[in-house]
Length: 121
Picture 1 (cartoon, rainbow, N blue to C red):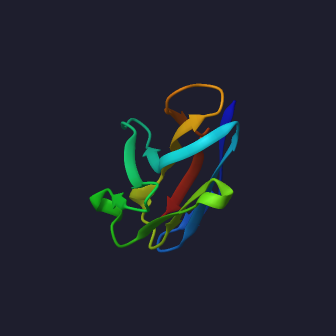
Picture 2 (picture 1 turned 120 degrees about the horizontal axis):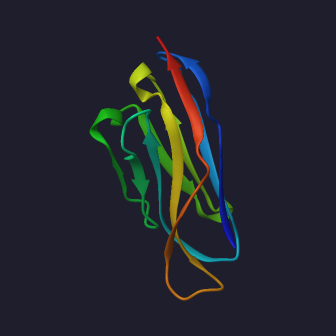
């Protein structure tokens, strides 16, 4: 069984910063790409940032220069440092990871439960 647990969301004023953390646990053989998605009310879930096992990154245009994704393979964790936050960044942020579990052949996408980020103007 594999789980992703997120933390670090909260309420912050515009221009402030937050750091999200996501840690994978359970019967894990290997972790490939990891990423952060977000979903605002009435909107579709969108990819915010993604990092491969080789540490290649990509970002949605709206967060480039403000957000930084990083991972710690020894801790099975991925982080999202969010600076210069704007009200339009308000959303539920979800962690996603492509994981090869010990108990099954192949790799599968797993999701965390989501963490709320609210940016006030």
